Image 1 (cartoon, rainbow, N blue to C red):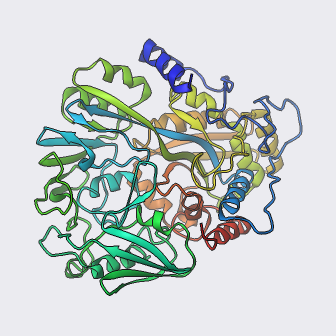
Image 2 (cartoon, rainbow, N blue to C red):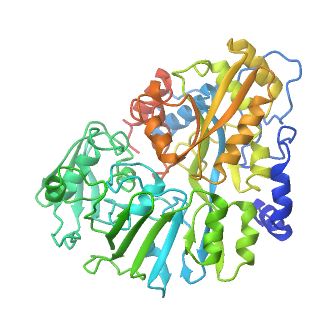
Image 3 (tube, helix red, strand yellow):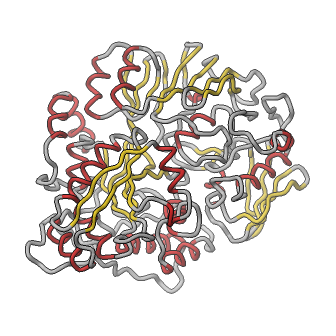
Length: 543
């Protein structure tokens, strides 16, 4: 019988009261009852150690002893990079997030692992629905923000070039056929029956322009992630991509980054499209009220299958409890990030239900090596040994989470199954802090408020466990998500030194799990040449 069959059923049987009590107790004394992701609790080299504190022992650094073969495959290079990242510890590795939604029973919808909320996938007889997230979109520009909460809002009106099925495989959307015509050349066939919301027909030139705009670091937040593209151009009604490298994940990338815009419309607006919209999607913009709501009505000339609701409105409630209250009261029809201990309330209410699924999102604590003490390998590893991840999964997430050991999740291309999570070992953590030379360090852990499932509670537990070390102190700084993101995508030296973040991986490929954080770009917070070289090597090996 699976963990889901036993643990979550038991939790739901006994209700939220006991779970809430468990979440309120001190976590420092809770030992690991299992690793949560099937990797064991070993030393990082498949040894299968248990979480036994290193009482009175000398500091023990974790080392990765994997070796690359002479002529490695791309997957082997990515696996090696994941193993190395576990040793280098640029993050405190926490857990794979479960997505838990509250849904009105009038709506038929199944949660996706990639966290997409796509209204055209909903079946309902209702004319109007409201969807409430923890955050709204800070901009309607489809390349102005790279976050799932923003994509969920804007993708009702804008469309990516390709889409992906529920297993992450590319499927047709605006692009109907795709092929690699050379090592560094891609040809895309474009749908010919697409109309923009202003009534203009979409052309291959618009698609080429949209790809180039997404790839322009002067205007785009996804320029470092859409792919190593030199230029997109219209050729005989198709779009041809000239690549700077083989870019093996290019088709995966086109499902996730960039959306189709009309070239002439963007130029007429001088590129300022943060509060207006002219897409090709099933809904057209009715109203945009910054930080309050984004309202859509059905686009009658949509090229695809007509969606059910006549209108859809997105709103935001940062606090978890009030979001659930709004769902139960009928003020909204679909909410994100239902806390596990709130599930019984949803179950007992009339006309609503919860939907859950393991997501493609990793939750972790970034340690920015531009700042002391995070320039020390010993200190970074110490923070991993200090945090009791399993106790957080058990007591805060009620087992709706799986421990992680590396940037790439199990089942994703390049995941290294030989790497185990860090065991909880505060004695070794204290010894490593002493060895790092940063004893007495005072840390501030920044956390977005209401963006991820129990994000603040998780951060406070991590900070509390770090603070219980005799030679480190740590406190939490609760932040609004847009403000925190605006800082962390600035220069690395201007970003917070220590913060909790979630990173969804819609491409299901290790390159996107690591390259934005470990190579030059807006999200880079760690500098290691060996790791960067491995990612570059992987990017030049065909799949």
